[in-house]
Length: 298
Length: 43
Image (cartoon, rainbow over all chains, first blue to last red; front, side, top):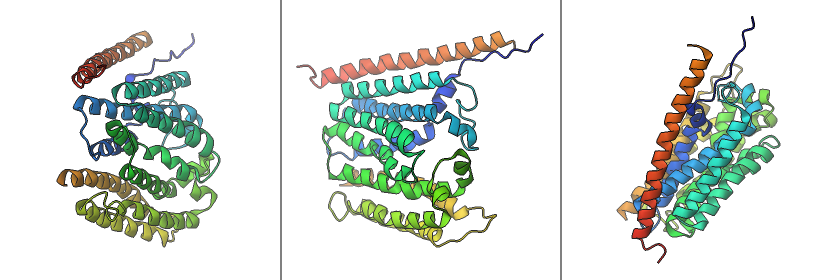
């Protein structure tokens, strides 16, 4: 008698996991803030639909990323429990789900708001999948520098959904997320370097070494700080945002400087690197929240 | 639980989740249409 294993169909929770819900939180928040920072109001139902579309678009990009990287995910401790490498879902299911979600989110965005918002949403999904995941990530340590643009689109989409246009403030918010991505990701890459090396992903610490990565974190923090504070002197936001940005960015710079000038031994637990990674997430929430509060108080 | 029963349980859970999702979607589309009509869409 043979003990044949019958494969179970994927559970709905696996499809949910495919959308990377934790990443989606930040994407939805920055998109919502872009929407609330716009100078005109939006009908609540249309606003809700636009945010839903941003979330679904991000979910689609996450699903397609996991579809393409299933083999790599299987080699990394951090990702081997995901539905595809764990064998709980077929690759075809993930592909169909991702493509379906992408098409649906862009169409619904176009119907609910306008073609510009739908267009930027489509570009952001395509950019994340084709430019970042398929082209850059396996080839160059600059992957997240250029690929960071994919995660920077949501405030632009939120703003465009309300106004049908783009302006200086959402463009600066785009620049902020774009320039924030390298120090954020490289802080993570420093403490999961072995994982990336085992999977053959040319992240900066793997290719150029720890010392160069630490220097790059310090260097990228400078233009990021400029983009974070610039809306205040340019008159795009008020003093509330300005002071929050100055204090929060100073703290970011302090944590980044500690990493930049640090040398580690073999058994280092990478606590400052983990602290910068965790703070960098809170930092974006604080700054985008401040943009909205500043707008409401103006 | 036999493998067939397990498969059935997963399928039932998925069907319930899908039904809920479609229900929410229908409500959303209705709400969206009403909002658009209220804003003078199509005039």
